Figure (cartoon, protein in one colour):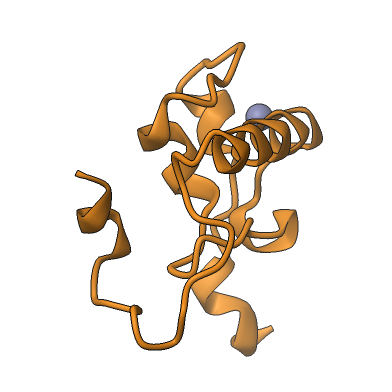
Length: 87
Ligand SMILES: [Zn+2]
């Protein structure tokens, strides 16, 4: 499978870091599963395990609700590093 070389090494980053609970306020953790447009990355790309993907999904939705991260990103506002604007 030559096409899948980019995602060949897939492993759960949260399992590797031995994280039991993902806090919605911990943006550095949520970053791992967010695309540049703040969309939740699917498990088939990130390689997260099912447990952690579900935790991350809940955490990201909570973070959106509390306005820590945006729901949508306008086309105009897309920048090189979107996480810069959080700080
Ligand atoms: Zn995991």
